[in-house]
Amino acid sequence: MTRFDLHGKKAIITGAGKGIGKAIALGIADAGAEVAVVSRTASDLQEVVSEIEAKGGVAFPVEVDLTVSDAAERVVKQVVDGLGGVHILINNAGMNIRKKAHEVTGEEWDRVVDLNLKAAFFMSQAAGKIMCEQRYGRIVNIASVAGVVALRTGVAYGASKAGLIQMTRVLALEWSKFGVNVNAIAPWYFRTPLTESLLSDEAFVQEVLQRTPSGRIGDVEDLVGPAIFLSSDAASYISGQTISVDGGMSVYGF
Image 1 (spheres, rainbow, N blue to C red):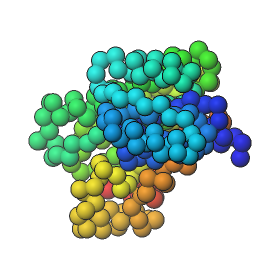
Image 2 (cartoon, helix red, strand yellow; image 1 turned 90 degrees about the vertical axis):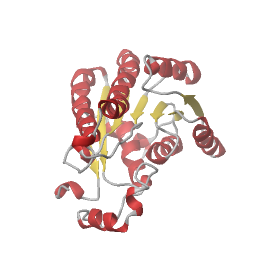
Image 3 (cartoon, rainbow, N blue to C red; image 1 turned 45 degrees about the horizontal axis):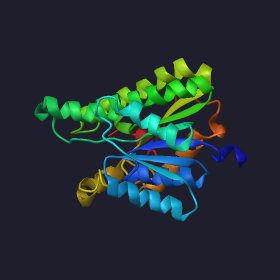
């Protein structure tokens, strides 16, 4: 199992304060990497750092709003200075504004796309420069099945995630020759702070489950294994791909 071992690697996980990002940060640390956890909320960061350190891991907190100009370059520089390098980037930071398409404002569109897609690109660009120079890197973008199939009341979110999937392909095409693999994970519904209100509606949950062959809502731990795999040498010949972690949902569409 040594090909899944991340000891000696330095990883950046954005949106690591809670939900999917927190679970992945803890998992990547458990696999041996030193982890930079990135979030806008200092209290969330400290909780994650404490959990990683309590298990003997190394964690480096970075409090930042990734939608601010030049934030990506500043984050990567902080991490390189603090941890001594960067080998893994997991672009998880994201948001959704659930509205019918004719109700979405320009400001709302920009907020979603700026975080979900633009920030992920510039984080990839800043880390990718270093990775290409050292001829080694793993970038994992947390996309969504909403970028593959159409979901209701999430047009900006769906567009941003579809863009993220295509960005994954283009970066893989450009950077794989430098030893930098770029892949994506596309989750379905998982229980996180982002979906808490939706999944408190039992009728909605039943509708989701009817379209989920595995018959359950995802748990954030279901994403940890794929994230470790794509971050490791076990995935050294995989690039430009999107792995759906959706209980089979994409077989149906929604």
